[in-house]
Length: 187
Image 1 (tube, rainbow, N blue to C red):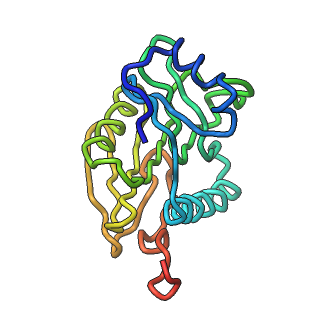
Image 2 (image 1 turned 30 degrees about the vertical axis):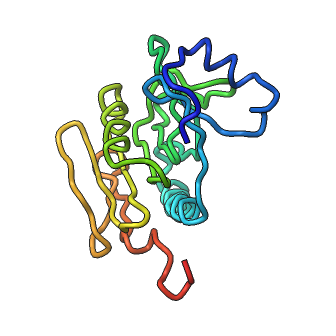
């Protein structure tokens, strides 16, 4: 849900500090304040993927999988991004303890929420890639497909495909179908 168009970082920070916004999640995308309002399906998919990444990273400690961590480049006045899930290699240093990380993650995962167009999802993915993210996974929840983007490639995966970590998460793979609830689970 878009709150207000074309806000600067300073205006955005003042907006976040308002008492009525204390328990809400917002991000600034292309200067627009967007409230994050995930559905149960969205949360299920991110939880499943997070679980698979957790198990993989326990056995292969390459870095950190992070749910809704904040990223903001120091010279970017239009974006304060919170991917649904992200991965950062350990070589980046200690985890940021206050505020946004001053760089983009190595992997950004976005699950499409109601009201977000495919154009918006692609534009956001391209923003990540243009600023250092090496791979983006866009999960189209209702269509049950995953789009994988890198600086040099773009692929669509269906329920019959495997989602792999490429050179960002070497050795990671999960069946796309395992990210979505089974038909008989009522979702």
